[in-house]
Image 1 (cartoon, rainbow, N blue to C red):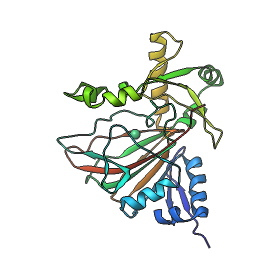
Image 2: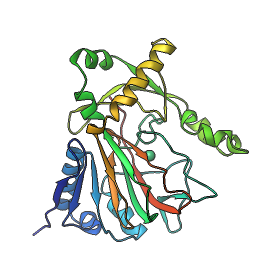
Image 3: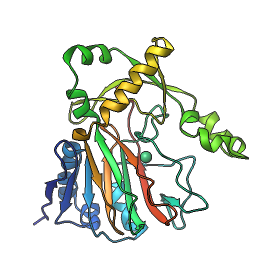
Length: 278
Ligand SMILES: [Fe+2]
């Protein structure tokens, strides 16, 4: 008999806590994985508490969701190349401050991102997620119709502009910039599994909306960024060592809360390849 997962909603519009299974159960059972896959599409972000903190187990769980995608700007764990290290120290604090969906500067951005807490500050360092589908549903039919027709441009350089401005930053990221020219995505994308539409622009990587005047683009993006993070569309996670979160980048945005410095924080991350937004 396969294990059954228990899901308990973490907020009104988005997020669920999953219990009753361990990462290894999901890695080793098609039937358990199918339940988790259904839950992630429905709830958009899932939280698992008190999981084994072995990078290899984390990677084998992550690989269930698809092929692993590397990231041009992060180092990986020794002996577990698929697992990236996100570390924040007083000397090298986290630079990501704004709401975003991961790596939308790519023609085919990642479908899922998985994060596991390894070293967690005594206080602070929560993560927020927002449902881009609930935000879309919350707009008027007229506004949805207008947005449906738009295309936005996403640019790696915008997301890493602080790193680029550091001494040696431009040289260090030159290859990544050359490999990631700006890309166009529909401003509203349809989730390939749920069929739900969601707002698909983010403050980290979206540079502008195509065919609008610069001021129109700026004002509309700024409205959408505020709208997406309406409290009713969000959920917040307080991390513990071993906590795992998996989210669907096709239907959500997230934001790290950098209120824990100068405490040390270390997370393991795996991203999974996606398809072309449409
Ligand atoms: Fe992210």
